[in-house]
Amino acid sequence: MNPIETHPFEPFLPANARLLMLGTFPPSEKRWSMRFYYPNFQNDMWRIFGWLFFADKHHFEIPGEKRFRLEDLKSFLRERGIALYDTAYRIRRTKGTASDKDLEIVEPTDLDALLGALPECKGVLTAGQLATKVFTQHYGIDVKQLKMGQSRPFSFGQRTLRLYRMPSSSRAYPMSVEKKAEFYRTMLEQLGLLTTLNAEYPNSNK
Image (cartoon, rainbow, N blue to C red; front, side):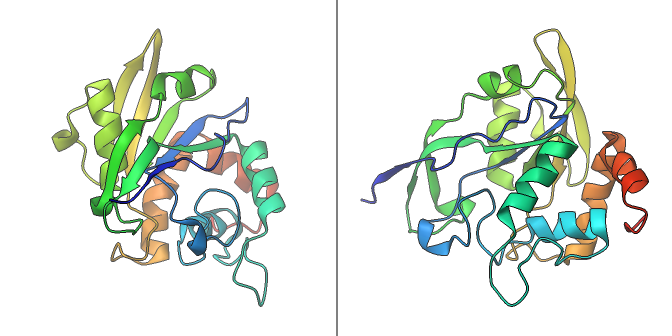
């Protein structure tokens, strides 16, 4: 039986965050290009953001190297108010892969604590089927009524937020970066994040 793994990263929670992005759990360390979220260079999450905000899906890549510009990426996320973590705190890999179907969640993340630490948060993004399942079960959201690219309101204390179900940024999910980005564009515009950036970056793709 494979060992239990504890999440290797601290939650990335800018105080001004309006969006919380939640995956399931990072891949094994041998697949990391950096010590941060979506670390596998083959994962397209940061290409989606590069395409939407800078009209260049390679914006966050280091030319000629298979890794991302980590400090620039962190600065970008802090300035834009985007937080990150995952829905699983401890897991076991049943087959040694990062695929959702091969992950056994031993201890889910304290989602209430995450949202409690983000008073400005208006939306939560779940990328991937398992992350969506964990989140919707915790907050009593009918996942059958939440199709890809859609959102639903949910209550957290005295606040009402929206859950956005986005396509996975993994290349195993059969959709181009540009097509995935259109789902993300709608969410970011609704949260007022993309509009703000377009005013600051006139060469952005919008």
